[in-house]
Length: 169
Image (cartoon, rainbow, N blue to C red; front, side, top):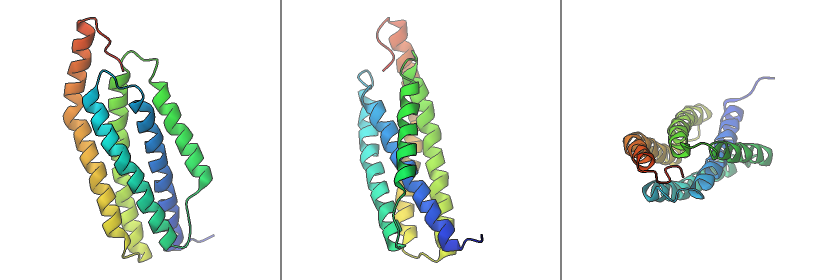
């Protein structure tokens, strides 16, 4: 069955909304375990609020298309976010693994928003670019923070381990 540009665009919006749900779960689980890294906690709390707003923006775009998100996709991706975050818990270097995962996830979201911008253009949604570019800039800012702070987080982790202190999360 042939799909219209609009159908493909709406599918992309639904998928992006589910991705933001996954991000919310992933960040929320990490926030539960950042006692030794208050600087990371502060940035993740800010990004969690941004992510919740990104999801709301996607809801608005979906409503403008006369549709809504997929509860099934939200449930599955939310569960995946929880499982991904909890998968690092038993690891001694949980903070490092989470930092690497966050860096990769932010870049996945960046690619998702760039693709949505193209799909919005093809579907003729002239309202979407301002909304999508705002979310894209937030994801780019967070990805840059992840890149800029990986060295410092790794050094702090190694220093805490060398001092015999709790270095994980």
